[in-house]
Image 1 (cartoon, rainbow, N blue to C red):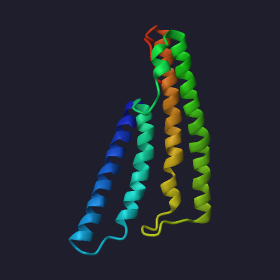
Image 2: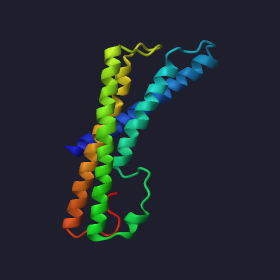
Image 3: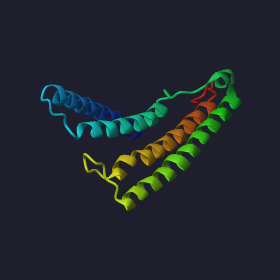
Image 4: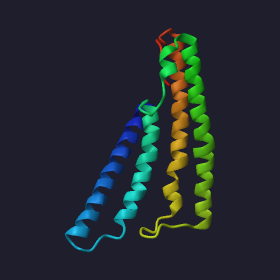
Length: 165
């Protein structure tokens, strides 16, 4: 099931990136060839960039390509490596829950309540901001998955230095 979700996630990020390229290309063509720039492509590109950046960050966390300082993690072995791995994932999950899920949900609710819409596309801004709690939930799930994977490695004695931090 998780592999299906991961494939869907990669497909979604690829589709958003392709749509961003099409939007920016149309903006360039309409500006320089038609001498009449499109009014909505810049806003669409901005929103797509936000979604790609924030969703991409959660995917980067999933595949362990996120930025991290791992000098200590590389030197630890066994139980200490596992404990550090759990601690780091717990801090990440706590941040994602508190700031992204709770704070992001409040932001989405507030923009729904205020009925904020984007100027060019007329989209409710709550749709744009929905990516924050969505990504926070994904990061929390991935942190739990990392801890479970780390526990299995530790239990089986496969922890050789750096865990899944």
